[in-house]
Length: 257
Image (cartoon, rainbow, N blue to C red):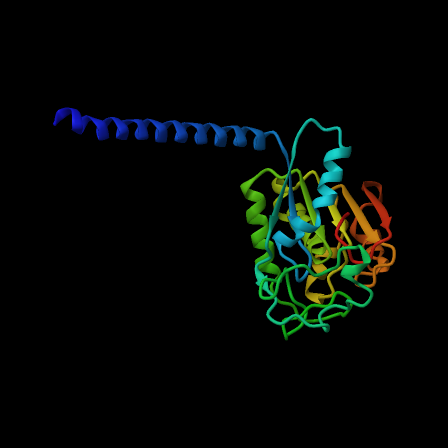
């Protein structure tokens, strides 16, 4: 009986040893990942209107590969993509002008979230919509979004802030807020794809002076959603020229390729 009982006991012991070994291996892997993350360059990424963090990650895949291939840095680059806090309930053509933007053009269009998941950093219309080219005395959602982004910046020491379209406009506002209120959280640089000045009059306080954070600004030469002129209008009063490079791509309202 003793010998019969010893068989499952031994098997159980082997199983326990295997489980402990697996846990030790997993812990070692986690510790290694944490060490690698500690030495990595970290960039916080803000998606565009009617996108999500996940869709923005997908659309920037080629850009991230290009950066990895062309940079000579010994550090790895970690991109953190977060979602804006506000759901776009019923997106429509009235929100933004999508004329000339096509998925068949070989370029990446403005939208990117699936139905029911598309998000916004703020709204400029009482109906819950947003249009970057229409001035408005009404706005909703910016303060909540600002709190969310600042909270994320407190979690990690971010080297950079990257935004696209409304996300780029949001990134600019975040920089102005941090320079005024919490300079210890400022990133070292920002990459702004198709940024623009908020059309909401209540946000004018963020444009009373230029940001001092070094920025690279990218505008689309034939962009019909965020025309190049809207981005250029932000530069003289919003971003220090000596710390900003304006690149012209051949895209429309596209994510970086």
